[in-house]
Length: 359
Image (cartoon, rainbow, N blue to C red; front, side, top):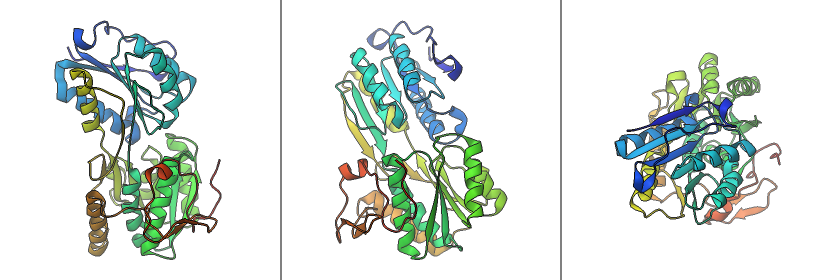
């Protein structure tokens, strides 16, 4: 029998996965998911949960899935993972960067459980890592933003100053600058993945600074809602948020986790699972682009679609030189393409972005 459990964050200190006594070859494979936000955020966590539901749809009664939502990064996460592993879960997906060390720590105590950590870089024999090249999508929306802004001021609501977020800011800025040399980015750091109040406040603060286009690397549609109310443009984050901004949303970067989750659960089922590192983008179907709004002129749509196609084909890389760092020092020479190692650890702004990158 298929089993899906919703476990409240308030019970994260001491929950139990009832009815999970049989696993693996003795019954349905059990797959657990740890989420940093609520499944109703309509952004990051919602898309991961859509991946979980895709696993259920693919395997039916051969799989049981469970999840815990709104688990803080840190000690709480370690406790939740440990209890999930003790309950007999065969594969655990830990879906936030801040779960990296807790995942490694718990995996060492449960060598027979497969762990999959999203957006991190630490692996072990029973720990895989996976992420998406979101920066490819940021390149596309950067092109659109640069072409659509009339004030030449684009706002960016940033979560935490980790490489994934910094990469996105840099990719979007470079693309916007390539079509609009006068463009400026205004960045607000909110130090949260999901807090609709803070996200709305950040959107309002950016609008007060004169921005007429907003991007975000946070998970709720609050900024989209504000953009719709104020008559400016915005982009969906992780999912298509056009329902919250039918006039505001120009397009969006979408996350598509289902195929990866299905493949990794299947590997547990057939005994072929092994520790791997996956970093896929538009071409592999892990990153998508939401439909282009009719608000976008035909020539801008064509430009954005051409870039999407080139990214999918591998003939365009968002970080191709010449590119300097913010201090003016050369980072990439003419025609040089950034390697994955540098991108994975990106901790600097590119030249032209104002403001100091937080530590």
